[in-house]
Length: 116
Image (cartoon, rainbow, N blue to C red; front, side, top):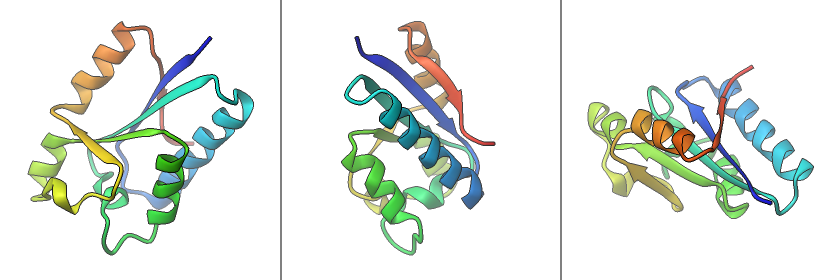
């Protein structure tokens, strides 16, 4: 059985991002090989997804290396004048994060809001 989980990250707060990474790592350790995870980022979370001037790039890369699908909202990127080419390797985009969450939940994915 594969447990499908989507986590929503909207905050630009470093502690929230670190907590989200920790929670996802704990999930992968608790259910090794049995999870499919997507981290959908919108709102103010864009600094964590950039390939330059990003102190948290090692944490992001850790998620990508562990096969977490990290996606950025194109609306967020447009609002903040960010091009997809500025995103770190392994980060993909979706047209609207909120729609992505709705679709995944309709497909039976579990939902987690990042934070503490």
